[in-house]
Image (cartoon, rainbow, N blue to C red; front, top):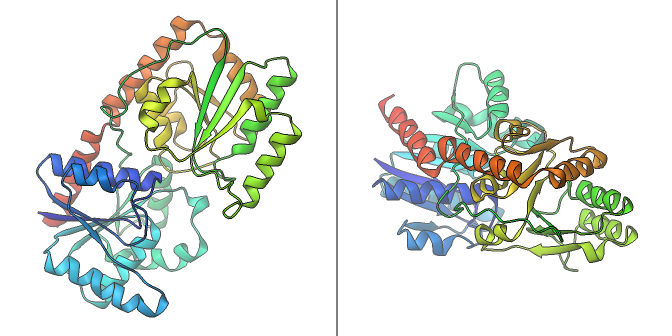
Length: 370
C-alpha cells in the first residue's frame, strides 16, 4: 500500500504538526508513505528528513498556472502509484478533488477536516463539500464536528472521527515543581479573535486589581505584532495591555521550535480558544505534565475533566477565567500533582501517536477493500 499525505505547507500550524506526526508514525511502522506540500514554510522539514519520510514539493504558482499545478498533482499520484491519498485542510482537499475529477484519478481519497462548523467558510461549504462524493471518507478530528458532518452527509461519504495524536515521547512527562513566589502562565496559539487572546489579558487585569501581582504570562505563537505584519486584533491586544498597565506582566514569545521543552518552565497552561477541532496544545500540555485550564467549548471537556485532569472556564467571561486561575493557585500541590498525572495517563491511553497511526492504517485498508 502506497500512501500520499497532502498539506498546504510545513509551517508551525496544528494541522501541519498532525500530518507530520502521522507521516513519521506510518514510516516507523513500515508503511510506504510520502508527504506532498506546495506552499513555502519548512518548519517541520528537518524532522521529516530525520525520519526519512520522502517529501514532494510542488509550486502552485498564480491563477494562470492552476491547471498545470493540478496536472502535476495527478502525475505525482499516478507515477508513484499511490493507492491512497489523505489530505489535510480544505484548500488542499479542493485541489486534490478537482485534480481527481479532471484527470480521472483511480486512487482512494480521504479528506481530513481540522476545524469546527462555525469556522467553515461559505466557499468551502458551497464548493469544496459539493465534491465530497469523490472521497471515500471524511475524517473530522473532533466528535463535535463528526456529528455535524453526519447530519450533512447521512449516506456518503463515510464519516469517521479520528482524534489527533500526541507524541508522548517528544512531550515527555516533566511536571514543574511550583514555587510560591511567581505564577508563570503559558498560552500557545496565533494571536487572533478565535484564539481569544483578549480574555486572558482582561482576566490578568482583574487579578492585578485584586492585588495579585505575581503572575507572568507568555503568549507563544504567531503574534503578528511586527509593524509590517500587524493585524487589527494584535493592535487591539497591544492597546489593551498598555491601557491596563500590564506590559511588565506579559511577554510575546513568538513562534518557537522547542515548545515541548519550553513548556516545562511554566506552572500553568491556559487555552482560551473560542472553538476548534481537536486542540493540540491541550493534549501536548497534558502529556508534558503542565496543569491545563481550558475553555469549555466543543471537545475540550472530553480531554479536561474538571478537578480530575484540569479545569474549564467560560471563554466569554474574563471573570470566570480569573476565578479559575485562583482555583488553581489555591489547590494543594498534592491535588495539582494528581491531576497532571491523570491527564498524562489519559493522553497515553487514548491519544498517542501510535493510536493515530493505527486508526489511519485501518481506514486506509478499509478504503482499498471497498
